[in-house]
Image 1 (cartoon, rainbow, N blue to C red):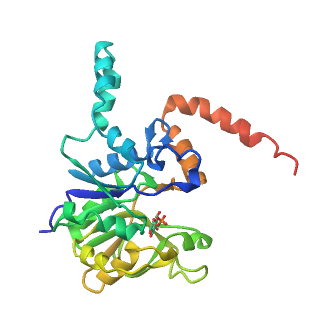
Image 2 (image 1 turned 30 degrees about the vertical axis):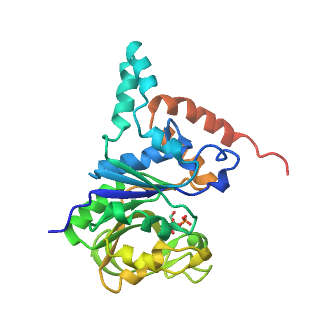
Length: 297
Ligand code: G1P
């Protein structure tokens, strides 16, 4: 029997410099996609996969995230007094159970690998999930749930992957596949973080969803700096691959990299179009914008 995946780590310490000045006082994870902060989509995805406890690895100026997942007493009391049942239910639906979240600080921006390592004591000796909150995924079934299902069959470590255009591989971690397990899942034979242009072993990027065995922590504890001078999770996963199996999953769904402006804006449109009322107004607006001749150069 594979040990169940009960806990997830969400590294939320990044500065969000690409979105300044929006992220000067507001964490990038709190920027809004339609009517929910980015981080809420990621937490909802984790909970839909059966995750019971979420560990947020935060940094300075991120306390709003902790407030967001807490009870907002004054607000909820006022809503109650005004009989705003629907709004109250919405808040309740998205709020984790008391005691099911932990917050720890990364203290120094040493890289994703270091951020995950900071969660080691809270995770303990059990397999766990990692969800990078820059990425939100639109799918029928929670992406992490799809991974948990595969984990139930094959165990080990699982990484969600997605195809990217060849000219973008240098922005991501890239995996190389070995033998197929089934239609969408394969064994991984190699991985590299942000390969130099033209050197990527494939165009399958690591999407920002992982199921990892706890032995990764020991490797992370002495992992040296890699791509970009940072301690990279990918490098420790490559080391763990010598001892344990890694499988990839081409999940059903589509990811939006909200760490950059095109991805963030695309996510707003894609999730906005899910609401029929919004779609009714958005479609004519988009037609108008697209139909408009480009401004003269
Ligand atoms: C991180 C990971 C990378 C992954 C990417 C997905 O990179 O290191 O392997 O492909 O997230 O968004 P970052 O975007 O933090 O530079």
